[in-house]
Amino acid sequence: MAVKHRATFTKRERERARQQHREEKEAKRLQRLAEKKEREPMATGEDPDIAGIVPGPQPPQDID
Image (tube, rainbow, N blue to C red; front, side):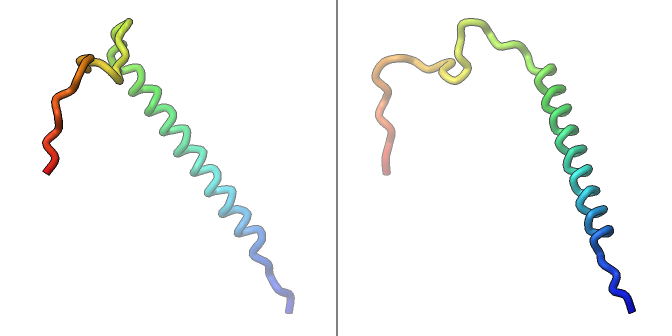
C-alpha cells in the first residue's frame, strides 16, 4: 500500500497562515495610518517629550 504524504496539506496550511499574517499586518498598518490622520498636529517649536518641564533645581522626592 502506498504511503500518502501530507506535504500538500502542510504547504497549503503554511500558505494560508502566511496570507492571514499579511492581512493582519496590512490591517494594522491601515489602522495606524488612520490614527495618525486623526491626531491633532504638533505645536511647532515645542518638543512633546519635554513640554511642561521647568528648568532648574527640582524639589526633593519623599523616599520612605
